Image (cartoon, rainbow, N blue to C red; front, side):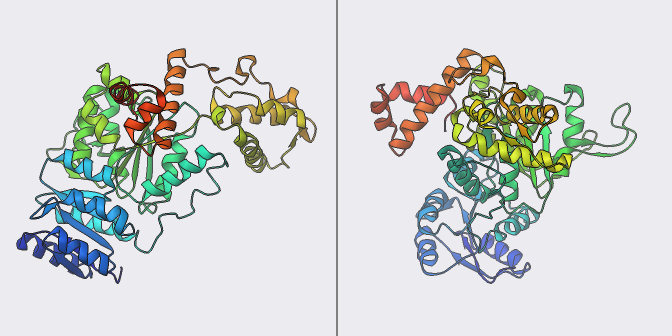
Length: 440
């Protein structure tokens, strides 16, 4: 699989031996280090395909090594071995850049899957180019999003994607999947708001024959069907509270229990989620569990609205027209100058999805070889303005506030004290706003 060895960092000889034997059976060479100092020397002197580190070491903890690797050996994926049930530490490790985690006592089947996924990154630069022609736009916000996709694709950490309806959150999730080591596995999208509450457990987890009236055969759930791949939970804010508890267990234990089954079944999936709602606000109002929020929101990606990147509108429009032309087997018509100007000055409350609908309608109505301003039929209330749209004013104000805080944090390299000064508010007030707006 790889000629590079795997580094095991642990001061327990028995565990080191167990891990080494397991990896050798996968035809993998191993090296071991009993402490942080030795691990750093080895990582600085040699190349490794993967680093597996325990959290408790004689001269520090695994989190220090995870952080050190991000700057000193960034090409090496690092996975942490945590105490059973210590999800808080696992989440910290993922936030610092760990590829994945495994809990003690180490389940060797889970370990083998983790190692297999990590080795797919060996020799890669994390940028597969898969998303290049599909996430269009030259605006700075889209370039930043592309860079973030490439970065988070190398990890197994849960990612929460947020943004207004119609911005392309599912596309971003698919690109994360396609750009990472799970690209050969399934990508299973689930709309949490579209499944009736009484069927949700059966749909997600599956069921055994005879477990309830109408269960005439065994059924595989959507989560097990994503085995080895990615589960994308769209509109996760709509998940009922009783299912939030069950999903939390899936993420923590990496196992599911089908309805009517007496034991849990191990499952290897990466969880991505999305919503157009403010999850932090849902937590504050008691509609979303705080513990689940911190599990799914390990890494947060924001997809910008179309009105924030007007320079991308015409490039997107032309790509959509080409795609529609291929589908309808016709030569795509050209946009007139008047139509191009109308699109550039429109605010697109419905974002990219609205742009697609506008152009599909215009293509149907157009009788000549071009699309004019009269064909695109823009809504009168969509004139370009930052607060135009269908969302409540409060949501728009929060968006504006979030953007201002993010801009200040980026400008000060995430120094909150300096960002607060730049924004003209106290450090305490900034910290409160960051928490309230769900900014990580």
